[in-house]
Length: 581
Ligand code: ARG
Image (cartoon, rainbow, N blue to C red):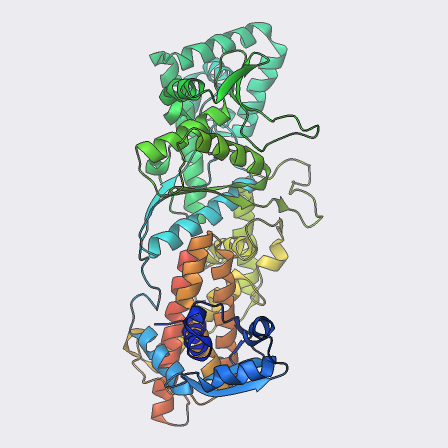
């Protein structure tokens, strides 16, 4: 099922080869959307320069050689030499008909399936998840879903921060409170921010406690069984909390996907030794450092990646290097995608550079940092609570659902809902609003968290898209037809029908691009374009009251293909679609 843009590109290339010789068979035909036709080919302009001829003449010659059969209904040369191309209604209808009967809605499975690690969420044990983790969780989950749909072998990987020096003081604080406090779910332990801060305060103010904490770190790193058991108690409290948030959000991460920093602990010493043996890591100011080529500071001095601190301890970078080595050597991955904040961009560039110098990352393994921009409040500053604290994720999500409830009660519904229906729908609307708002912005740009804008049934929002699917479903209910029974044939009359069908043909290309670039916003924008085309269709083309049976069958088929495209697209984004709203 060819994307119209790809098909026309191939046809124009064939015309170029026929007119100017075989060397032009791969030339970029410069196909762009057109405001006068469906698409335009702009290749005549650069080509004319090269051939030293008039662009219009070159355009005419391309057109004379263009095979339009079955696809193009009209070709015009306009302006300085643009070639305007109009697709034939028959071709669009036939392609849309194929989509209707295709389980994959025109999304081709990857020709080279890869093993892809998608590392996302990655919160820290014994700390609240913050709003930055919200974005990495939502975007990462969408990337994982998209790549899996494309047929890749996706390994979801939650690289939680569960290791390091703070665990000494955290374990000692747990002992002071009594382990049973954790078992009881006492808030002194389960309120992670308070727990962490209390431990920190004692560490800073109480010498004896600080000493105990330091020996505890040594015991932890030495693998002392009792210390490991206590550490596990803390990890479990946090896991319960992470899972509550994941459940609330409807993300696909489970405990099995957790491979925290601690997992790589046993590999750190070897990793470091190998870097030393290869002469990549050298002692500098007492610490063991790598200086990857091309990274310099303000004064031109080489920048270090610290691999072993002067106190002998390993750190965040050491773990990331061991992780790459493990993923390549043991997991045999083809691609690793790190869904992490933009603030860590330099860290990843440097770690990847060291891994390349060490030969752990070679040309056929892709490592990429899928950067996530910061989340701002409506005041344009980093999102904070009114009291100036970082916002707790669980509270933020609860508020989203509460506000979704108020918005939901404000709109007219054509069905009645009992209390349980309402709770389920409102939860989906709240989560859909938060997730779609996040996903519709390019992941590496900053994004303003604004409840009022995201929880609206109008505009480019999750609730608007969910509502569009519910509206289509209600047509089928009223018509007494199941969407899967709508068989067409699709015939195109009204321009709104044509525009909708044409939009549906792009799904395959969009999903592919979103997967290749790890940019779910491409899909988020596309789903909105489909819903928009549907809205125009809905306003202009009566379905159940269509003028004749043939038109009704065609419109029902368009509705069915639209519904599946929207539901599938939203599902790949992790946005739920309630059956009724
Ligand atoms: N735990 C880290 C944080 O909360 C994110 C981990 C990112 N992943 C990595 N491989 N370094 O900032």
